[in-house]
Image 1 (spheres, helix red, strand yellow):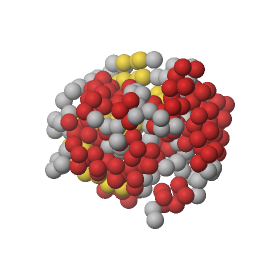
Image 2 (spheres, one colour):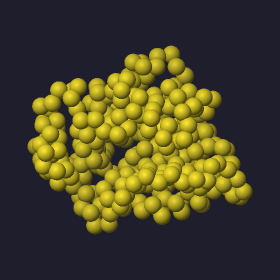
Image 3 (tube, rainbow, N blue to C red):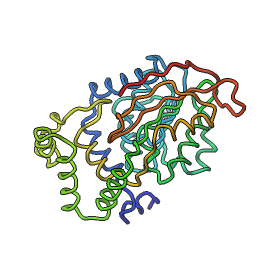
Image 4 (cartoon, helix red, strand yellow):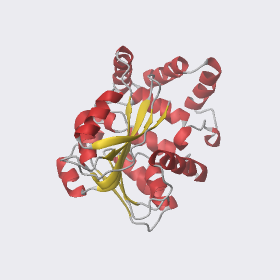
Length: 294
């Protein structure tokens, strides 16, 4: 039994991998194309040929696959063994025989990190804040970027008291039985959405919508499984943008792309590149423009 499995059984961690397994049934060419487009927008290129791509917390493997299709050489890992299995299944469906390495492990495991080396692009969307050690995980992600590389991460926005309240919801979800979990998901859906959207979403959560009719979200994701992930996603940490900027500067990195959630609920998305003359820089200079989308 892995540490992850034990933590899930003890109610200390959300079963992210099981949720990704359910989501993976919805993955199709259209969702993969949408995932590719989101990478192109954030990274500023549609050609990753000859570049290495590390996916920290690969989840379903959707964005590892998107990077692979853009030409990258991909290495994926996830702490949750169910997520690893899901990613392996996606590889068999869409990229059999490709040089796409997948393994189980944690970004907090120094022995794993020490043997990974460095990568041209380090990607971790909505993962580092679920490790239980956000700042250590972010520091490690920065160190994994090779000279000339980019760091692409998203981290939950700090909403102060609201964030603390959501942390309580998440703890309750993971320590409760199926009925309480369903009620928490339903109640959260009603709280987060307008009435017409809530009715539609609750039908989806209750399993009354055919799989092909799942609400489609940006990045090729699913409204249903994103909601379950949001309500259950624990451990749970948050960060204000200025805190993330400070970590980037400390590692000799400069912001290239920013997409915020307008100070509200959700993730702020960052792409950092390095500064050439930084004493401890692990990446040389890159474009200095910032793309900000609210």
